[in-house]
Length: 325
Ligand SMILES: NC(=O)c1ccc[n+]([C@@H]2O[C@H](COP(=O)([O-])OP(=O)(O)OC[C@H]3O[C@@H](n4cnc5c(N)ncnc54)[C@H](O)[C@@H]3O)[C@@H](O)[C@H]2O)c1
Ligand SMILES: O=C(O)C[C@H](O)C(=O)O
Image (cartoon, rainbow, N blue to C red; front, side, top):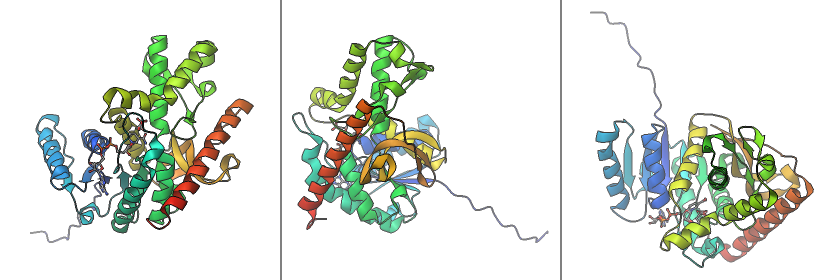
């Protein structure tokens, strides 16, 4: 018998830890495995819940026919060696609430979750979903101790998806033709940019009058609230999970896609020490580059107002939570 030693190739199965097995977390886990992107570890504080979701999704493989594994757990040890940690743990808002009403509760949850997850996956990229998004991304970054480029928040992909949807519905054209960009915070001061929006290369401004564009911009700004008011006991989760999944995919596959994400600014756009929605080049190292768009004076003013509001909320959160996180 030939005794030549055989060294099996080392293989790496991409692995994503999703912290929070609620609506967004479980839907995101489903998207990740059914798109064959990675194995998933789904963690929640509620005993049995993530285990049940994971078993249900494993059983769906008998129909979906993919080979990605999903494990549900309450123990951070099981999340070890993740390539991406997605933080969805925390409360969603109810009708009448502002995302900022969640700051105190969710900052404590996000701080604890990030710290525990990164202790087991020190090489991961962290993607934050919990609201209020821009402030929570800052909290996660501080707690993670990671370089800022390895922490990014999901909101702009969702906000741009909503803007694209409303444009597609208004014009009656396929959503595949539409590109849109939304900057700034994930709140009332977000900055949808009609000037950077195209329909198969045609500027939106040539296809719609200002009044129609303003109407769709306003609907985009209130897209989350519109859904909370309809659903009453929950906030949106299908489109948020799709948006987070697109960012996870860009990272895992090192796609260098340019997607809007909440990134740490160190002089870009003349701003410092905050996470804010900007076009990010996303790849396996996280935010590889921040693209600085040429904004006109109205866009610049709106973007700066958004930045000012996020900086103030980060400052307030730090004061409120200095002894808690
Ligand atoms: N960035 C965005 O665009 C965006 C979009 C949608 C939702 N969100 C936010 O995402 C968060 C989750 O939304 P959802 O609809 O999934 O809510 P949900 O209530 O369905 O799920 C939240 C889950 O977090 C779990 N949880 C709470 N504390 C935890 C902890 N310490 N560790 C681990 N898990 C914990 C809960 O048990 C629950 O299962 C909310 O803050 C919501 O506002 C953000
Ligand atoms: O609106 C919310 O509270 C959830 C999320 O931020 C959204 O925009 O759908």
